[in-house]
Image (cartoon, rainbow, N blue to C red; front, side, top):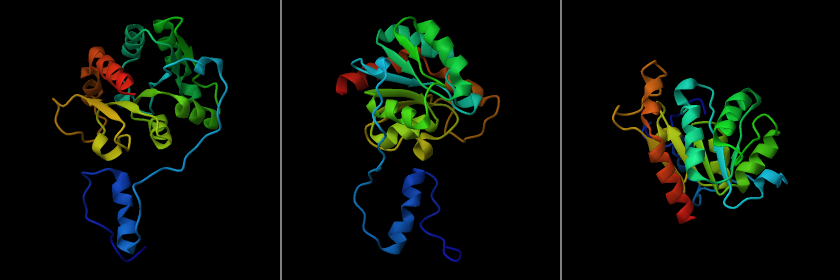
Length: 206
């Protein structure tokens, strides 16, 4: 671990693939990757809808957050029940989105344990999310994710697996992960219509 560099120095691939270089170097065979992640089932009334769409609209950095008012507009256009999730610090933002959607939205942000959050994400038909921890939790359980990306690179840190889809504005060139003021604008270039269309396509496929 201290003397050898494993695998090619190629950052233009998913971080998971880079980590698997360790197994390749050791000569260990491995099957197609599966995450052994399961959460206890949760019995919240808000989850008793079909299809179940979950919004995870918050991350730790403003540049990765699609505007809250666009999440709200998207929820109104979809005309589907929506559950919002997040940490306690996200509760106010999620409540503003829920208020903007109306009676079809339930705000669970800050009201769950981490295990309960995992249970909600696991039971969803689709998670609409920004680049965040809940995105990776949902992906690990196999739940399809529609991920809205700004300055970070989905090739490197997007949801892992073929069932997911990423929406990102490509006019600004490759993502560099730098959270400058200009990067605050990159995610705002993504329209509500783009995301709504992608949600409907993914739900129809499912």
